[in-house]
Length: 194
Image (cartoon, rainbow, N blue to C red; front, top):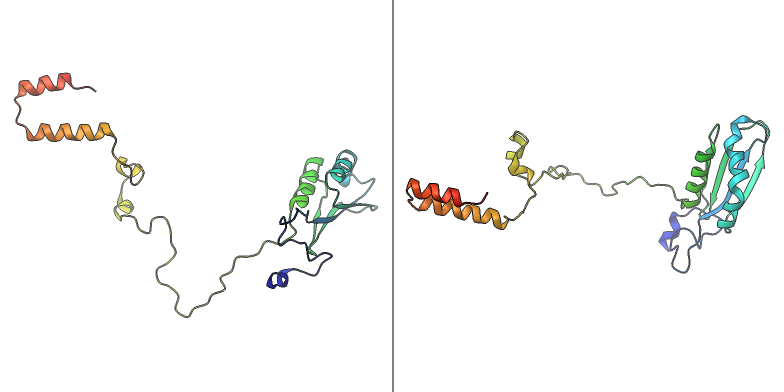
């Protein structure tokens, strides 16, 4: 029951937004109000959205109440109200049709929950002296002094040798261990595959 402490008191607290989808999905957008001017050129994009897409939007979202409020000589505004009691609004002054439809789609898919700032709730008198972790914490210090590009450091870590590389190393070991004359060495070099 501690989950309910984080919800604002709204119209339907039992359904939103926690445990959404356990029984069936409940769209979180409860009501959307589009306020616009019928004559102002600042509301052109909003009026175009209303003429083209508002009926289709209403058919696709039957759980959302849509209100159109014409207001004289005012800037266009969209107000979205969610089941958890949140109310978000966006000014659409001088926005075109595409931007208006993107904002309506954004509010339709939004949960109504504000993004929380991630805080550290633990407090200590003796903070750690190790510092923050980063990808180079446990890496050899020679990387810091290397002059890049370095072929050896460009390879992925833990990469095993291929069979060809292993055979080349065996050949080099045998060549260094055996005392071969120059003529035999020339003959081996000519038969070696490149």
